[in-house]
Image 1 (tube, helix red, strand yellow):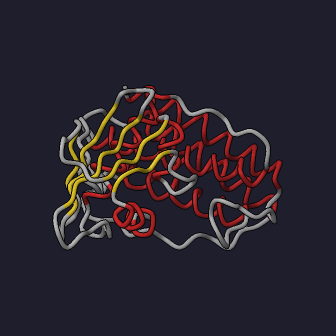
Image 2 (cartoon, helix red, strand yellow):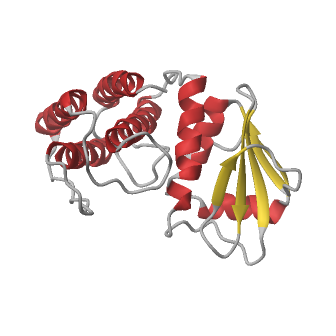
Length: 244
């Protein structure tokens, strides 16, 4: 996907998140995030937006710790969220394409700016889904191409980090398959962080599969995996230890 696509998605999804939160009400429970209410969702997402804005705006090159969310509530909280989202979109949209700044996972991208556009588009989309789950009713669709990109970022970015808990004592291989896009990833598990590459292995002992949009939400622990086959212990390990 192009950087302009990510910026457009971030803009749209952030506004949809705010609208769904307003409809749900700040006291509403967020079923996809146990122990959270909508106010917690807005505090978290708004803090992420401001954190990313600061890194890009200041061209921060050192690891930048994530701050605590503010104790805002009511209209002040919803206004704060919307202002932060708008500032993030404007900052990413006007940042120089040759920007150098810190990033925090190794998924392949063309530039640090592309990293932050991609990351914030997916961050906001997942939390928009959370806000709509709190509101109830149908959720906004997620395009196949965007879902495939998000699965790739999760597998080759987040789960490639040292903090990933997807580990096995003996090497094992999992296949992840977005059926409607014919997109496949090979995830090699071992005592080390997982190593993921595009393509289908012959030796996979388990497979996680489904339509790209459902698989995307499932791998972000928002829905059950549509189709999980093969080594049941390995599938249980994935379900238990794959949270980000």
